[in-house]
Length: 256
Image (spheres, rainbow, N blue to C red):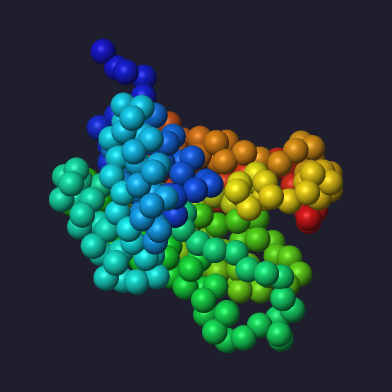
C-alpha cells in the first residue's frame, strides 16, 4: 500500500540547508519520504537540522561543503552516493545577497564574489549531480533564482546578474538532459520571511507587503512545498520552467 508520500525511496541533496528556505526544504523532503543530505559551509547549523529530521523519524546526514569549490562539491556528491547508494533529487539553494550599491561603486572582487556564491554554485551543483542521476536513470533538480533573476532592482547588479544566469543555466540543462530523464527547473521567490527578514522592524515589513498583491510576505515553508512538488512525479512534465513564488508581485511588473 502506498504511503502517500511523494518522495518515498528517493535521496535528496539540499545546499544552503542550515537555515531559511534550505532548512525548510530539507524538512519538507524528509516529510515526503526522502533521505536528505544537508550541505552548507557551517557544520553546526546543518547538523542541528539533520538531528531534528532524524528525531522526527526521517533520514538525514549533514555534509559540510562549499558550493564555490569544485572539489568540495564533488566530495558532497560522492559522500551522498556512498551513504545512500544513489541521488535522485537536488535543490541548489546556497547563495548570498548583497548590500545595495550603485554599479560603478562595486569592486571587481565583490562582483566576482556575488557570481561565485549565486551562479557558480548552481553550475557546480548540476555538473556533479547530473552524472550521479544519470547513473541512476534520471532525477530532478531545482535551482534557486529570485524575482531579481526575472527583473532587477537598483543597486543589485551582481546579485541580479547571477540570478538571471541561474535561469539561463537551468534552461540550458533542461534542454541538454530532457531526453535522459532529468528535469531541471528554477524557483524565483519574492520577499520571504526568513531569519534576516524577520529582524526588520514591523513597519518596514508592512511597507514591503503593500507592494505584494496578496498583501503579505511569503513563508519559507511555502517555498519548500513548491520545491518538493517540482521534484516529485506530480510535476513529471515540467522542465526548464521558472516558478515565481512572490504573492503576485511580478504579475504587474511592480517592484519593492
